[in-house]
Length: 104
Image (cartoon, helix red, strand yellow):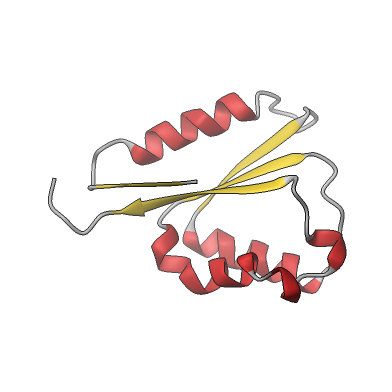
């Protein structure tokens, strides 16, 4: 899923609220986990996902802010052939936020 829009239109605020609704348990023990990542956060997450084996135990949503700034990391994340088999999971979803080029 992807949202695009001009600066100041509320994409980040709406995405944070969406994340909070998906992951209602502050102790991260619920059925679902949702995390809000900046472009720099994503690089570290992708590095871990592409170099280590692990199993997604719960449905997980990664909300990625300024996704266009981290297109290389997103390409690695999307490249299932580069990830260990254990990391390829339908339990992982991503939600990208982008800033549009036009003035609002």
